[in-house]
Amino acid sequence: MIETENSSDIELQKLWQKQTISPLDLNDIRRRATLQTRKQRFYLALDIISLSPWLLFFIIDIELPPSQKVFLFVFMIMSLLTLLYIIKLRWTSLRSMNKNTGDYSLRLLQQLKNNQRLAYINKPISFIVILGSACMEPVSYLLGEITLAQAMYKGAISFAILAASLGPWVWWFHRREKRFEREAAELSRILKI
Image 1: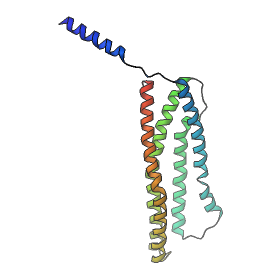
Image 2 (image 1 turned 120 degrees about the vertical axis):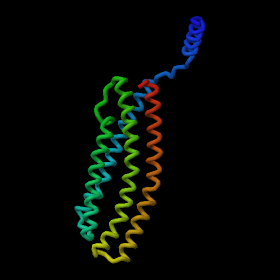
Image 3 (image 1 turned 135 degrees about the horizontal axis):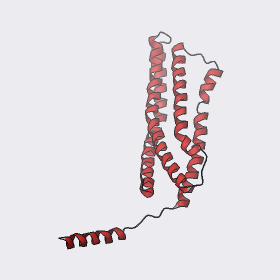
Image 4 (image 1 turned 60 degrees about the vertical axis):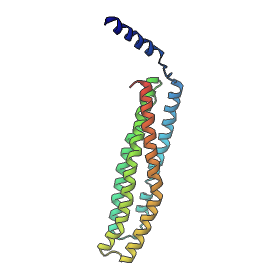
């Protein structure tokens, strides 16, 4: 009985020693972390610039019914809050870089997970924008600010434009979410975390 256990242990040990080990390419991890930092800086600049239409809305006095101004103000506040959350998620990659490879590895892993969260939250945000914009015209009609014909026409046009333009983005966000999830899992496996 003891001999069979020892022989099975020996066989298991031999099998274990035959396993191939994935080499950890430190230069590749360092390169990916640096690239991730550059991308996050660029994306953060785009995120901040994307708020410029809200500034134009307040600088240029556009004639809109009061309810639509309220809707747009709420969208602006939501955009600012979302931007703060995005900055928080991008911060891992934006903070100062240490030259320690372990730090690169952990920072890259955390940023991949944060990128997955960013892609995930952009999907519901897109739907909120589409639905909110579609509701803006009917609310203006119900408050007597515009006619039914105007509400139907403007509502249909804004819904169609937003759905057509945001639809591909939602698909892209979904693909990015799955990609970052896969990359984070692979890096965790390599780092044995």
